Length: 220
Image 1: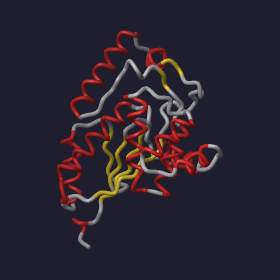
Image 2: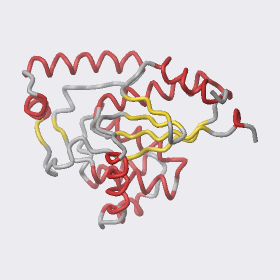
Image 3: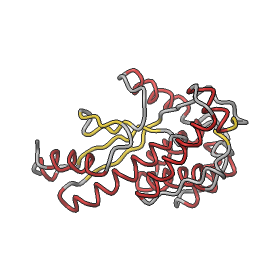
Image 4: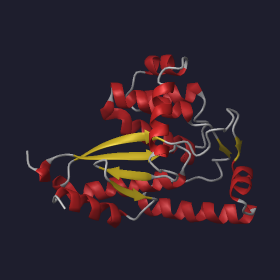
């Protein structure tokens, strides 16, 4: 197999509660589509928690943003509108009126890890379901009933999802993955790592991801 046809491994390090991760994923997938058969990819979703100490009851979204980033409520709302507009340009719907709270995302990451092991072809569908649930529908992505339903909507085994959620299964594995990326210097997401070597950070335009894919597909 030539290097040009060797699948490009992409590790998409992100959090379910990160709006720029939703934007970055939309842009990346559109870039993949633009390359057609020129670039074959293997996309893996890796865990990162923006708010690892978030209580299970969550926090009010505006209060969280103003407290964490030292901005005013008006600035938080303006930023939200800018994110909504950017998402709409890429075909993703942010409904800031529904997304009223920030939730703990650790169990969502455990489900994504499980999906990546047991049904890797459905991990991407689960990621999309989680992002839509959080940003479009304003659902509580720490609630086990919600998570099991989302797993089923992605074609995964709902009973197995509930079994995972009802135990500490994959807790150590997810913590290890998180430590790996923070230990590698990842402090912001999305961080998109190509072939374990090339890093693109942030919700970049489609063209940035497309250029990276074409260069790697050509062996550059």
